[in-house]
Image (cartoon, rainbow, N blue to C red; front, side):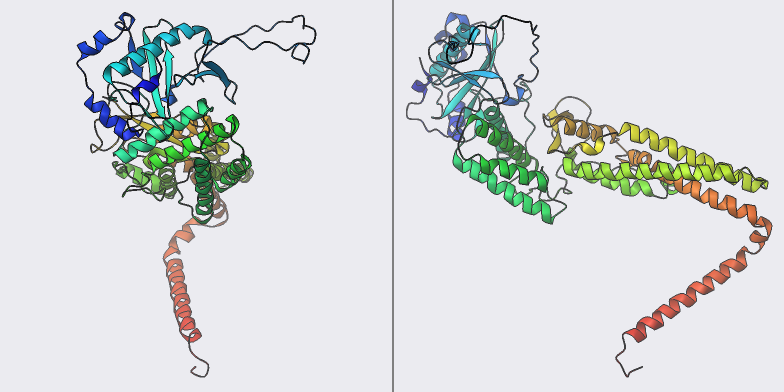
Length: 531
């Protein structure tokens, strides 16, 4: 029995399907009587496309030499295609993995085709339950099924190609089922979370031709985003202007629909859908600048001891902490901006190590001559500070080797409701922990790192202090070296006695300079002849 019987002149929109599902809550005993006997001890479990384990499946092979048949794979000896049960066709994802499609029954599966009997059993199970509950389905739908090897459970989801979304036969309680969807703030917000899952399905199974309207819309999105990125540093778009240029070239060259062009469009649309989820696209509280936070979060604290420590570090950590905070607003990390930040701090550490080495060398040479006790002590402090700058620079450079290359799209730490202690403000529903969204691997490392170095109370303040330690130590080594040289050639006691007079002289000179600048500015603005 094919799935078409469930249509029965019902609307094909997902919203109407959802309303109908809520109306068709039958008595469990009635449904159980309508199902075949084999379905009593089995369970169907909702899942999302991002939970597809295609990238985690392990398999080992043993290559060996063989006798190559005469003319194999040529016109004189073509292999017969592998046997497929009636109604099934095999497709190959551009990445290389095969999957199987049954157009008559609107079913797609990526389990080995030798398990066809299991697939038919589960298809019959879905048909029976849909018929028993009179569940309407959209016209252009598809069912993905993934039965376990034992045949006791089957994970599934439906896709609606007309509305670019995924759905299930029943209401899905995210507290009960882990379907890898983030929490949402509204029905509109949920739309983009589901839309991202739809495009992930199309990426995994790119046999369905993407409408030309979706391709043209994607081109328009990347064109506008490129202009935004070229004219603003606060754009929320997940790619750089240069990457947008490359993607536009790919999209514009895909003039004919193929599995490869469908795959290209689906992967990019999945990123755009996630981007729209992150910025609350179309809502009154849309995030239109990357420095806008939309989740309430306690401000980082700065203790008196930290303030004194920052003073000793010339308040460098304050600027660096603000940069880190901007990099991870609402725990969203942009690859382009991370690359710029990492390039800057790595260059600073490299320069600090060079300066520290030079100062340590100069201090060591100067320490060889006879010095008074004060000069010798200052020289030792200069050398120790320089060595500390070299050591801390070396450790940070080793820890962050290659970090400036982490540049792709966007990494997000996905919010999952769970009964654990949370770092966000109590205004968020229940409790939140973080789990990385499946994106570019380097960006996953980047977002995870930013999360790890952000203290739940002090924010990025402590990490910023570590980042600026080499530069501050170099500054101190320069100060101690200058004092060392000065104390070696100047009578310190005389200098202390003459300090008040020197201070008064400098203050009087500054006053004269400021007065002269004011007079000069006044006469500079006067018209000719008025002076």
